[in-house]
Length: 238
Ligand code: IPE
Ligand code: IPE
Ligand code: MG
Image 1 (cartoon, rainbow, N blue to C red):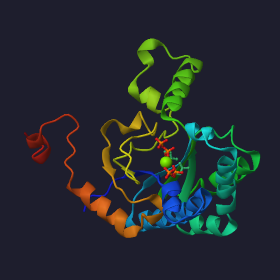
Image 2: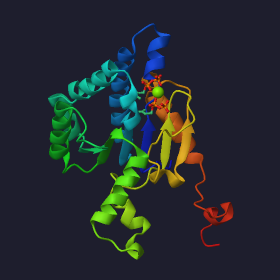
Image 3: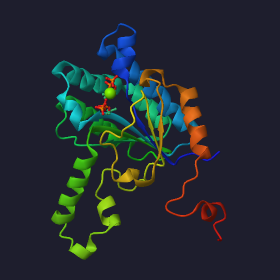
Image 4: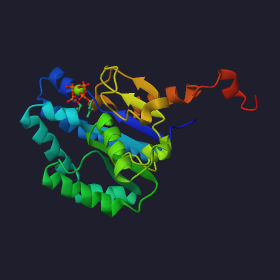
């Protein structure tokens, strides 16, 4: 079965999952973290090399203060010594895609120490898109191109891509969004040029190993053409 090299997930629907159960939104986020844990382990077992989880967008700062601080608290609480051991045992490198400077100091410190400690791991890269905005990422890359003094003719797709948060990683082959919304919400805008997209009505906390396997089975049947004809893709000698 052909697996995506890079799988990117939009973990949506924690709030609705909780509302259906008469629970608070924060309880939904709590359940969502457990799902994220299950899913990254499953991806590692399957042999997916790059996994990106959309955890917090720049636009999410507009949410009620209590919810925002709960979410960052959750990140800090979730990154325990036990979790670090798990990442080390499974040879997983943690990366953050997004602006770390604007995060609460404790959250930033925990994430920085995890990134440092797992930097040498190479079986899977786990990217946490946190305080992330795809448009902002492109603007930031443009600024870096200028700062680095590139001449107009030196500004290529490669030069720009090497200034994105995902530098050195393949573009996402497969983007999965839960909870029935059919949009990207500012996720990996540059990198998603040829990503296969998949949407499910399942709310994130209910997205388990079997749901992921179902999505991956569909991915395996997709024909990726990158602008060529179907015939060219099927017999590359044509
Ligand atoms: C996704 O669930 C988690 C974050 C965006 C942080 P939501 O909180 O967006 O849940 P819904 O979309 O309101 O159900
Ligand atoms: C996208 O979900 C961001 C994350 C999953 C972190 P949102 O719930 O913020 O997206 P919109 O606002 O419905 O587009
Ligand atoms: Mg949402």
